[in-house]
Length: 88
Image 1 (cartoon, rainbow, N blue to C red):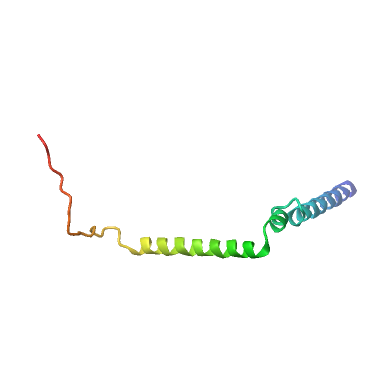
Image 2: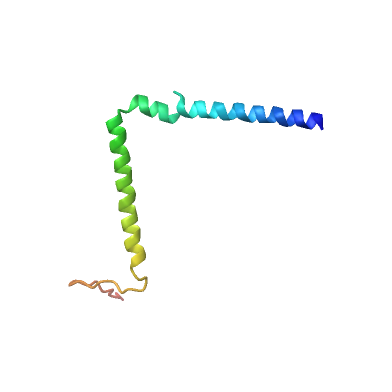
């Protein structure tokens, strides 16, 4: 029992140490966020975020329109229609 409790305590300490390392990497200079903040100015990052949201809204509108159309709808006919002519 004592050995299991000591082992459990050691494992908990190791997990906590690993979690601290991961958090440090995520917010430190080696993390992607740190590099992005150093290389790209704030106003550019804000603009990119806005553009990304606009892109996703455009995709959503497109898919909403596709989903809203009935699948068996006949294609629209315009003035000029193409006909297949068999040549023998």
